Image (cartoon, rainbow, N blue to C red; front, side):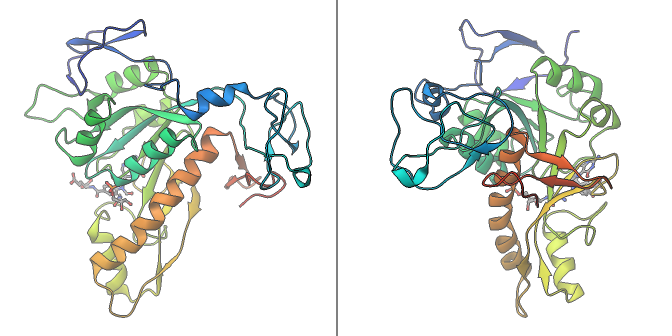
Length: 311
Ligand SMILES: Nc1nc2c(c(=O)[nH]1)N[C@@H](CN(C=O)c1ccc(C(=O)N[C@@H](CCC(=O)O)C(=O)O)cc1)CN2
Ligand SMILES: NCC(=O)N[C@@H]1O[C@H](COP(=O)([O-])[O-])[C@@H](O)[C@H]1O
C-alpha cells in the first residue's frame, strides 16, 4: 500500500536495519530503535535470567555478585543470593523490549519523560515512533532531534500529508508497536485503532477521572474547571482508551492538593510533575507485563518489589 503521507524527522539512514516503506521515502529503523551498545539494557545481557514464577531473586553476573542494596523480585533467576550477604540485586525483566508509539499534540513533556526513562534503562521499552496532528509542535521537534520518526495523523482537511486511520493501523503494525501512549494528544482516536490495539492504548488525563473529563476537557480548561468547582484535590489519571473521550478503565491515579489561592497554571504545574512520574511508573509496569485484571474488570498493577501485592 502506497502510504500518502510524509514521515518527518531523521533522513533515511543507510543501515542494515530493516527499512519500512512509509510514504515517499524508505525509513530505516534500527532494532530496539536507536539503542547503542552502551545502553544499560544491552549491558544487562551479561545476566542470567530465566522466565518462570516470581520468587526472591538475585541476578548475579556470571561468576560473581555485587554489594546489595535491597531485595527485589523479578520473574526469575538461576542464582539466588541473600542481599544481606553483600550481593547487589538488580531488577531484571524477561522478554524482549516493548515497542512504544507516543501520540502528542503539544509540548510533549510526558513523552520526554518516557523517552528519558527508556534511555537511562529504567524502562524495558523504546519509543520507536511519534504520532502527532501538529507536525511543528514541541513533541515533534523533540522527536526529530532524537532520531525518532514522526507520523502525521490525522490527515488535515487542507493538507495532502498525513495518514487515514487504516493507513495508521497498517504502519503501526508494520513497526510492530506493542503499546500506544497518548500524552497530550487532542484528537479522538478512531475505532479502527481501538479495535486493532485492544487493551494496548493508554492516555494520561490531568484530573481525577471520571471528574472533569470528556469532550472539551483538555489542557488548562481542566484545571480551570477544577478550581472553579471548589474541589480540594486533583491529580492525573492514566486510563485505557476506548471509543469515547476519557471513559476507558482507570489504571492509575495520583492525588495532589488544590490550594485555596491556586491559579490554573499553579495547579497545572503541580499535576504535571506527578504526571511525569506516574506515566513512567505505569509504562515500566506495561513493559514488564505487570498488569493484572480483577474479576470485575478493573485493571491493577503488580508491585515490582513484591509480586504478591497489586495496586
Ligand atoms: N477514543 C479516544 N480518543 C482520545 C481519548 C480517549 O479517551 N478516547 N483521550 C484524548 C485525550 N483527552 C483527554 O484526556 C482529550 C483530548 C481532547 C478533547 C477534546 O475535547 N478535543 C476537542 C478538539 C481539540 C483540538 O482539536 O484542539 C474536540 O474533540 O472537540 C477531550 C479529551 C485523546 N483521544
Ligand atoms: N485531555 C487530555 C489532556 O488534557 N492532556 C494533558 O495535556 C498535557 C500535555 O502536556 P505535555 O505535552 O507536556 O505532555 C498533560 O497535562 C496531559 O495530562
